[in-house]
Image 1 (cartoon, one colour):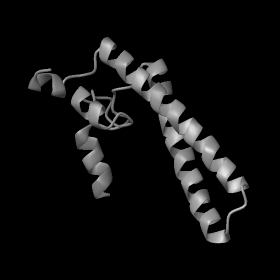
Image 2 (cartoon, helix red, strand yellow; image 1 turned 30 degrees about the vertical axis):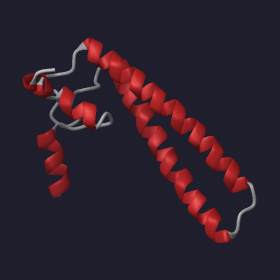
Image 3 (tube, rainbow, N blue to C red; image 1 turned 45 degrees about the vertical axis):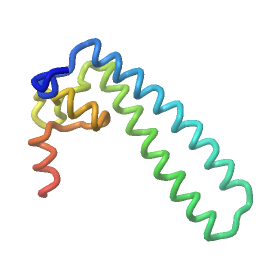
Image 4 (cartoon, helix red, strand yellow; image 1 turned 120 degrees about the vertical axis):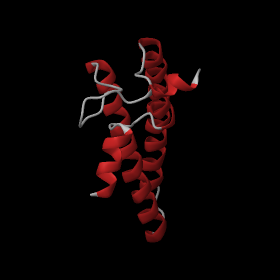
Length: 112
């Protein structure tokens, strides 16, 4: 990949590769979530149970984010900024596959 490729919109083959990666991550997170829920039900002390419940909540959020990213792929909006509708560079998506904003819009969100 050339440096300029890192700043261009995502292509269809790149989108399909990202879909495969996201689906793999989703499967892994769903297994993790099932195991965490089983551990919560396994009768731990209160402190361990609270920590497990926090892990369950974080994993549920991750699963939801992965599902939303896969929905964006299905809708054709994956790789487009949710604010300005501009292209999110493939280089950014490789690093942050769940990114919803281009770099400029992300910076604006972070400074609010």
